[in-house]
Image 1 (spheres, rainbow, N blue to C red):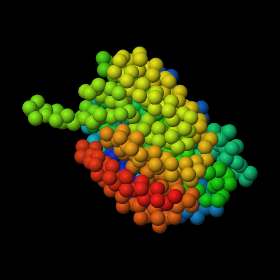
Image 2: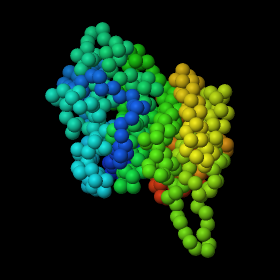
Image 3: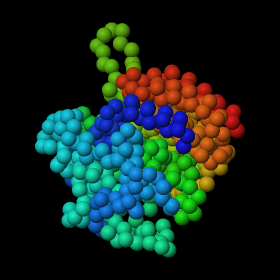
Image 4: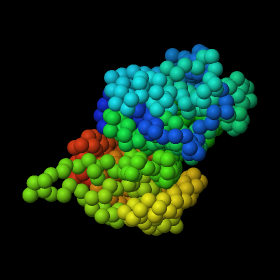
Amino acid sequence: MSGGTLAGRSAWLVSTLGLAALVVAVFALLVLGIGGAGVSAPAVASTSSRSSAAMHLGVASCSGSTCHGRSENDGTVVRQDELMRWQEESSPSGAHSRAYRILSEPRSQAIAQRLGLGSATSAPMCLGCHADPAAAGQTGPRFQIGDGVGCEACHGGSSNWISSHYAVGATHQGNVAAGLYPLTNPRARAEKCLDCHFGSDRPGQFVNHRIMAAGHPRVSFELDLFSTLQQHHDEDADYVRRKGKVSNVRMWAVGQAAALQRALSLYSNAKIGQDGIFPEFYFFDCHTCHRQISDEANFRATWTPNPGRPIPSGMPAFNDENMIMLSAAARAAAPSLAGRLDAESRAFHAALATDRASAIRAAAKLRATAEALANSFAGTEFTRAQTFAIVDAVTSNAIAARYTDYEGSVQAVMATDTLLNALVNSGQVGAGSATAIRGDINRAYAAVRDPNAYRPLEFRAALGRAAGAIRALR
């Protein structure tokens, strides 16, 4: 990734989604929250990818100077300064290490107090994502909860592979067989990240509407972008030889499909998708309700009709940011499924205006199509032509008409940024040409910087100019 692109993304993410410390994201969402369970969410059959079969030995077990604890990136195979990057205070790459410490800050403590949790630093509702969620009794003597989201939270408990993964003759495939989590697999990585960056049904891993009402920041996620900002390794020739290489476009597309699957699965879960007599509002677009209300005679409606949502005015809309992005990807890379996805998306929205049983049935159909798309994308190399076609689809009139709300617009600018970056990283577009487009992408980011001051006209204009410039690079 070019420095300008990373800086632009980081600046927007800090100012938009976190301000001070929101770890809800793997980037600088640095204000509070990777996670938090529903106020009364019981444990049910898990959608989570995590396994507690192996002992979690703690970050200190990886910190030797001959392992990942060096102060310089001068390792012959891996950088060996990975822990320093993980702890970096001034960078989004250090967000995971700050996750637990954030729980002691005033905002976190205030949220815990409003929810009656006691201290946030010991509340299971918070620790499910602000710390390594290793099962009780599955931690070694060097494990410390204060390490936050440590190595094994993502790479898996290391007791079965820590002593062999660096041995002469060791292979990545062998390490995975011994229990190392396969983060190089886009589907597996998406499932892992979504546990905290969208939610799961495990204790402490679902930020419901009540938690957000208590002050928890919004949860936002895009797999390729977050992966880039948290990357502690170099994908050099040696890395590619040992582990292979996954394109940014494939990671993005699989991430969109997996996020939609997760949203529909959790919404359909009776113990998560309902909150008393109400649906769980976490799944719905915040701004269909959080708009100005007026009793004045000159009142003007603040909602905008959306062609992808056949629902009556006044109803909260399901947050369909991933449906919109997935539609764009399908049109370019899986046209045989694109029409089915769009039809089932509309049917799901319409069913929400009928009753919960109808919505659950429609969600099951849409979830199956998202699964089919995830499988298709996982085996797609994504050519230069397809990547340009996705940019066109993301910004086409047919898709852009659905950017009536903040969340979809955020995904659109992140997608355009990700796709342009993918073209640069693969050598298909020159870095200089991409730099010339950076100004409009940054202006699109600026238009969605504040969810309460979203500027849709400026967003569409800037995104359109960026897309036109990218299109001209074909």
